[in-house]
Image 1 (cartoon, rainbow, N blue to C red):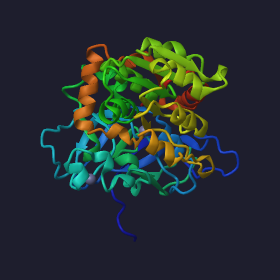
Image 2: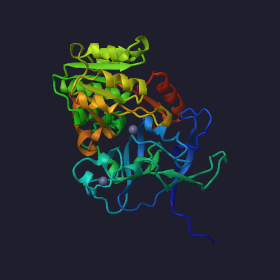
Image 3: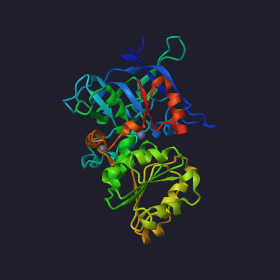
Amino acid sequence: MGAPTPPTERTQAIVATFPAKENHTPGSNWSLQDVNVATTLTDGELLVEMLATGICHSDLSLTSSPRMPYPRIAGHEGAGHIKTLGPNMANKELKVGDPVLLSFMHCGKCPYCLKGRPSQCVAFMANLPGRPGVFSSAKGEDGEGTSGEDIIGGFFGQSSFARLSVVQESCVVPAKDLVKDDQELKLFSPLGCGYQTGAGAVLNIAKPSKEASIVVAGLGGVGLAAIMAAKIVNCKEIIGLDRLPSRMQICKDLGATHSIDTSSITDLSKTMKDAANGGRGPDFFIDTTGAPAVLEAGFQALAPGGTMVFIGADMNPANGWAPDYRPVMSRSLKLIGCVEGDSEPAKFVPELVKYYREGRFPIDKMTQYYKAADFKTALHDMHSGDAIKAVLEW
Ligand SMILES: [Zn+2]
Ligand SMILES: [Zn+2]
């Protein structure tokens, strides 16, 4: 007789296997499977019954890297209801059945967490690999598949690509007073990563004035959230830039004063410079693309004293970009990194919900819903540009 097996519950999840090295298409190693989730909770853990999960680019990049452990379950824009509370929850107000929105995990004790900057938490990197002991494989009802093999969970403390998951309390944004119904809970699922990152890049990091001219490069969910935030500030010039012609209209609908379709121009830097501040260039360049050519063009276009904010990153070491420090010095430029919009989710997510209610953060215009089983269609639509923000329903 071996040790008794700890209690588990059967659920379904999108499991990523080790990515094939050759021609790996992000997401091609994902499949919806029956799995078992461990139901014995330790301090500060909850079981959350997921209602919806947004798909963020980090779900794809962090299941495409051979340096991560596999098989694993991603998902870090979860929204759902508390099924079980573990022992010693810090927030005594949380109740079984409460709706919750999920964001990133942080320790809550380090100097960065204590000064309200949890995205710089000393333990932030623990969000990326996840941890063993949360999920295990289960044979399907047809008897197919293996049973009992460990599957890594705890991605961003939540692994919300699962109908039922173990979540760390530090991820939780209580939503009882934020949402009117389940439909809103689904709509708000990406607030905890993509939307707070884009909006926070403007409202928490760049902090432009009304007189500022701002360029946002890359008009996915993150970039369009940055456009809406620049409109909340009412910046003088808000310039959206993308290679998809279909994004020109939506960025204007959401507040951009100009748009630049990079698929039809030759000198990107000059086009940006000409469009901003009467030819002096933008005061802020917010990049969500991580594309070296776009980064260099934005860097060259910046007005004196201008600020560049980095949100996107191409993880392929061959696609790096490094600025010349001399113009940084002589033109008094500022280059700032952005993780999660430097947000404190428990405070910033409710602020974004308030903007949504005021009609100033209309995320409903850019959200498309898919059944979790149709995640491949969602990925296809994200890739083609047909979907701006894909949300999976469980
Ligand atoms: Zn911390
Ligand atoms: Zn994300």
